[in-house]
Amino acid sequence: MLDISHYKVAQVILMSRELDRAEGELRAFIDRLSEDEQASLVALMWIGRGSFDAEDFEEAKATAAEEATTPTADYLLGTPHLSDHLENGLDALGISVVEDEDDLVRGG
Image 1 (cartoon, rainbow, N blue to C red):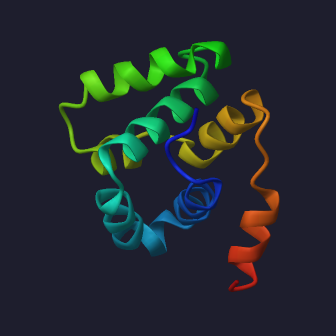
Image 2: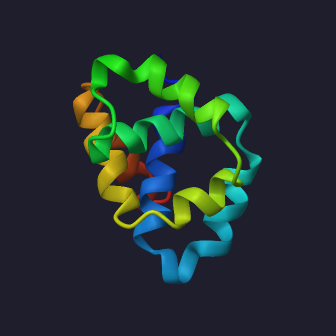
């Protein structure tokens, strides 16, 4: 389903919460992701904001890949409440990244 690890999603969530401090780092992180990982991240955000339902994840991922006309980092960083949408998308898919976030906060 997800073409991106839960750990990487947790990293994006944490960095997007600190956007004023971590924008450059987050932008570079997203730019280094594969196209499949970027499409999964966009699809996850769309599900979290209600543009797609969880059962339509594959369709959302395909749409994200097909309609990628703007660099993914620009698109995601221009999305208000990005971390909330990503968390909501994960919840809708029944995925928890709480442990990954805790590990990242502790420096693990």
